[in-house]
Image 1: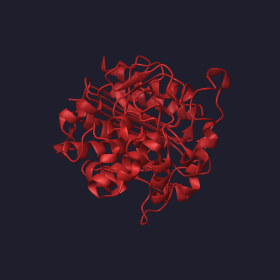
Image 2 (image 1 turned 120 degrees about the vertical axis):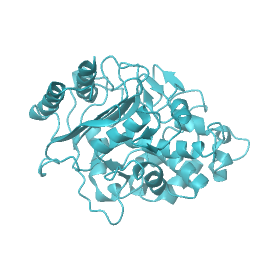
Image 3 (image 1 turned 60 degrees about the horizontal axis):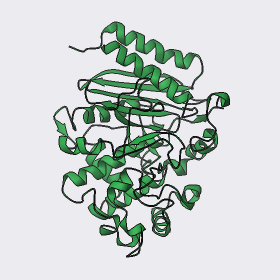
Image 4 (image 1 turned 180 degrees about the vertical axis):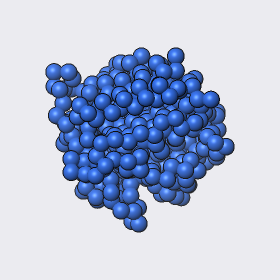
Length: 375
């Protein structure tokens, strides 16, 4: 029997609906699994300012909530013994760095924990090249670390996905978007999720809207810049069809909650195992923490491809437990797993709010509602 009563579901649904009523976004989805059982799969509002009704199948740009999908694809290769976390990147990708250089010592672990020093470069500001994988890889090969590898946690907003994606391709011989489908999306029946759109898929992705932030409630030195400006390129079809494994996952909250339900349960869901329990434990252990991230300028706790709970900015509830792990995407989406409570949670919207206050406030309200219901 579910630990979530009918009354609990009504209260969470009412809060979800209230966010739409007050205009926090035009459309949204909420997915929730408890003990491996789907207990909520909500949708409401419209797909954009002039869009049709939002449904649970409406596909959204997931921004950085894509990163764990790419990371788990790489972790699956570790499970298979194809590479190890402390391998140097150049061991699998020789063109990545010249022998004897600081860059040549960067490890897979450092890439996954945002401590490689390659947090951003010219390629971040070249959306015209994001659809050209070879051009992106060439830029990564010529980049130099902004920080000594292993010393400064600095969020890799875009480079994370390309670094992980090229490692997957070098090790497995399969492009990241195909490998993620084979190892994550297809086994878990995440039928509405992919990294970018394929040629045979129509571009019916929900329209993103960047709302003006409440400037008095945020630190202008935090984050990636003005959300509306950062989000704008991601409404273009060419970006939807590119492969940006750190930022252009296309999917639903229902699928994302399913993904986290699997990880909350040690890598297995409904008889399908994606990762070993040992690998789940290793990849979600704390690897790096900081009071001032070198990119975002705020506190952070990093696992291998995931954000850990336990900070004031973690979007997993106002009293975010340290054990919780997941990821958020540019003021519009979040997914997380609580292995102790066996919860998989996802909230996805088409309204991009300030990520360090407004978005965290709305997602924490829903996370808290879930936790209160289970007490």
